[in-house]
Image 1 (cartoon, rainbow, N blue to C red):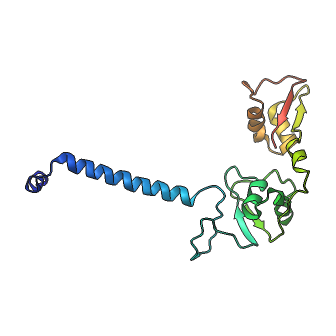
Image 2 (spheres, rainbow, N blue to C red):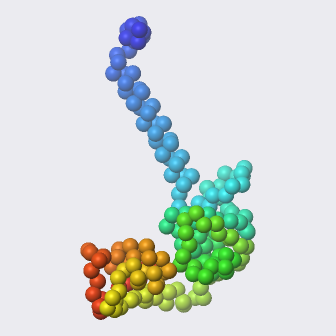
Image 3 (cartoon, one colour):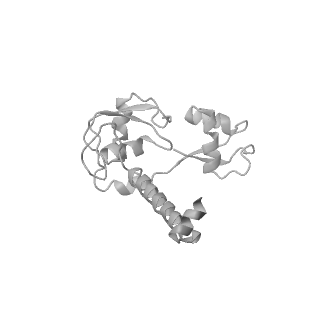
Length: 181
């Protein structure tokens, strides 16, 4: 039936295939464009509906934030305050004992606060902060070091990656390990 219809229209099948292929490419391109314009880094997504057409939604503070993959307090503060230095504000509002330990899915209170900026001249000193190191002693393994430093034995993977250890089971007394923050 399909071929009979095409003969009546006198369109070769190749024209139909090209047209359908073009439509698939156009629809796919539109979907990709829509995905990347709505999910670009730095866009704050709120649950409120808005009639504005701005490219970046603004969160009304105070609010809550669900911690996402690879997010730190610095990144979250950047999103809400346009300054990573406000990580201290978020840590205090959530009574965090160890601000380096936040988990994916954790609900954080984002309080209303003034943006914290570093005094002029201190920016260069921040870039020269020496990373934390640990010197291995006899009987150490990455698991115990991770428990001691982070309170989480599974953080040994971060230590191994930071130090490019080919075999994380082999560390020697006197090795100096870089501890990621």
